[in-house]
Amino acid sequence: MIPRAFAFALPREPLPYDPTQAKRLLAEAGYPQGFDAGDLTPFPLIVRVAEAVSGYLGAVGIRTQLPVFCATKRGKHWG
Image 1 (cartoon, rainbow, N blue to C red):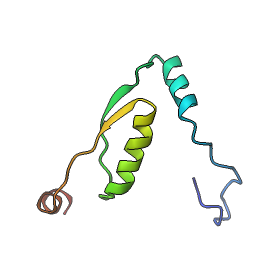
Image 2 (spheres, rainbow, N blue to C red):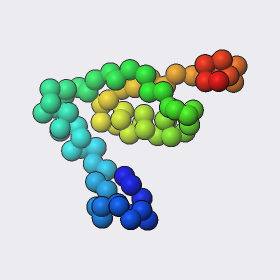
Image 3 (tube, one colour):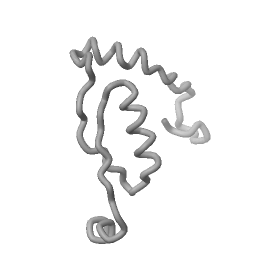
């Protein structure tokens, strides 16, 4: 969402967090047991945010993997 402080932001309330509704919608879409979404790689490496997002997705049945990055690999892969 765009912060309300910006002049061009639409005055809309965020949708409520409703994992029960999300599970129902996944079931309607043909995924009653959820699905594997693969790697969830944060950019930049904000691991705590990625862990929270992964938890919210997991709560409704969307399974993700968080790759483990160490300092030496990060320098090699992320510059």
